[in-house]
Length: 97
Image (tube, rainbow, N blue to C red; front, side, top):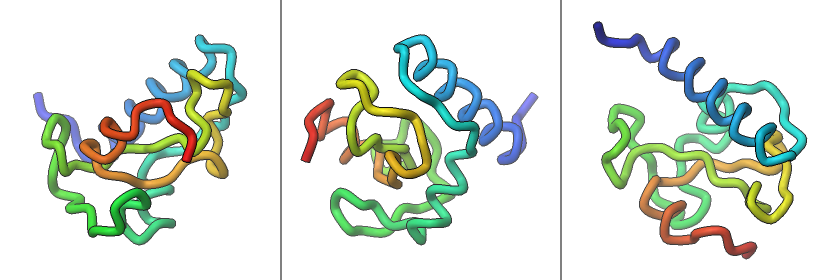
């Protein structure tokens, strides 16, 4: 069974929030697609467009980047997240820019 884009987005939101709560971070409920639309589907790390048709594990698929990483005490909130490519987000690691 293939998940619809809406189901995939809902599952991703649930998993990301759960990960943040388990790490002891403050966490809002929101969908990644909200952030991607807010950013105009442009990677906030490299400035290039993000192709919404690409799916994980494609390195150029969409990924949520936490400005202050959860591992460093950052919250999982709309204000602390931005759109990025999976590759750009992975390359950044848990550094604060």
